[in-house]
Image 1: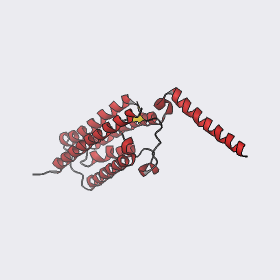
Image 2 (image 1 turned 180 degrees about the vertical axis):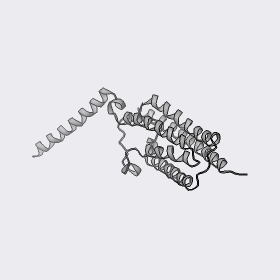
Image 3 (image 1 turned 90 degrees about the horizontal axis):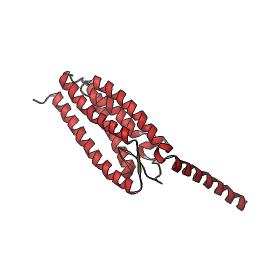
Image 4 (image 1 turned 120 degrees about the vertical axis):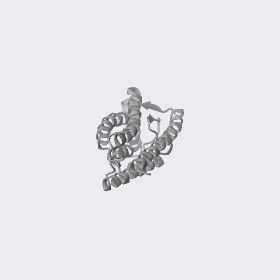
Length: 199
């Protein structure tokens, strides 16, 4: 007999397979980024994040099975809808970024920031999707403890990841960050000189 718990475990299995497929895409994109001179930052917290995501899916299954969590009816269906919407957001991010998409933070010199797709509305749409998933996926089958614990862990990890991604010195190094700022200043001076000459 097919029970809601078996269906939930099958759903978790499908999510796991989907995440593995994302890793394959990410590795391919990482090779291309490194070939273009890309620099990775936040390697240490990436390992923590990868471990957390693996433990998260295992904890969902363990809590439902070990603590005999029942399917919560309408709440479970709402959580499933939220999880599917979050997954749609992930696909939108991947499609928008194309070869620039990666689960790692890899900065390619000269690459322009993407401002289309979901980035028109959110600064970090992929992380927004993950925040929703950390709550929604466990609550599909009443695993509220997992939702609570991993949402807190995820908040701590994302705080570090976002800071690393947005810090130009951490991403580029002190010298290159200074060089880029100086180049921008020189471009402004050159433009002013041209205006002065034409005037």
